[in-house]
Image (cartoon, rainbow over all chains, first blue to last red; front, side):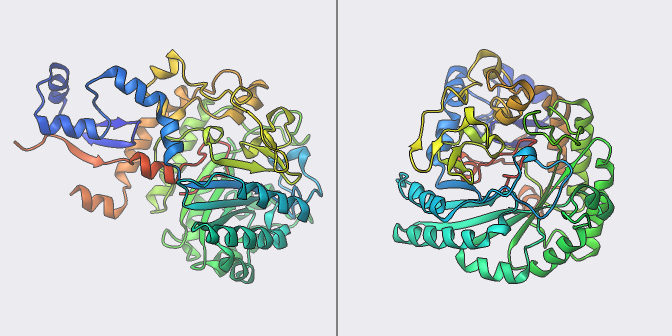
Length: 418
Length: 33
């Protein structure tokens, strides 16, 4: 079995065919298939040039302007590992800043664009519902005047995502919501209680059931080395409660990452510092398998550059400061401007093209890594200089992940194959 | 001649990839399948 990281394609060939590839004894049709699917190149230099221009090509093809709006840094939950950490507080985006965000978006170049996509994030974005409505009304109206589509998604804890809330937001462009469930009830409630201390699990499940069929729901979950084995119980519970693969758009679990001292909560000392921690190899394969074998969807193994490399993608903090990644908010060095004054040059500060070196260009995993996660690099080393190499992780797990996609391929893909 | 290649997964074309390109790192809330 061969896998092409450049395109995420998988093929099965007899071992003897490898010799024919090496000696050039392939039939024309076979050669064309291998080239088309990214397994073979007749010109190694041309392929190198293609890889060097890969992200530029993606940026040129990207049809949407993406904006993530951090509406506030407040929350009705008190998660033990809160990603915002010490940044959390009663900080809310003002109407004045909302107007500047709208003006900033209107000032962008929409040549070759078909859509404006917003993601409302926090804190808890549904503590700022009026601003979601206000910004969406403005952007929807602007988009329509330009012949563009507008839609938005929420990254929410799910406790306020009632049917009434969804009914209000759908006409404004609500497309989907990503909700976090950190395992089965007991585990989730220990990690994600309300600020009162009571559990949030049941309230979230009730809401997911109530909005089921109205809006696309994706479920994320954050696990640790000590609790990941309990996460499959959550999947079984969802199925039992009528929230099976037909009702949930996708599920993905990720490890809790440790924040830098500057922002980390003083009482939380768990969390990993790198995707290359060996326990994660088994944990990530195990959990992905558990998701897929129950019929749920999860992101496929395809090329995935770091968000900072995406040209038409911005994150705006509640105070109007612009960043390239939500993990970087509040880090002054990585602020790339403001919605009032516009975007500054950030190629150097964000070490764009960090993967354009001989080691990365010679790595079989390049399209699945592209220098890795800049945020992790900053947390781990305090700088974006260098790369966050995923090679140890991908060497250990890629084969199994590819097998999973084949074993649990969707029905339409199976039919296509047969 | 019958091709010896069995395509298990065609993968994704760049145009399609660019449509849904998103952050899929370990630290993430920004993935949309």
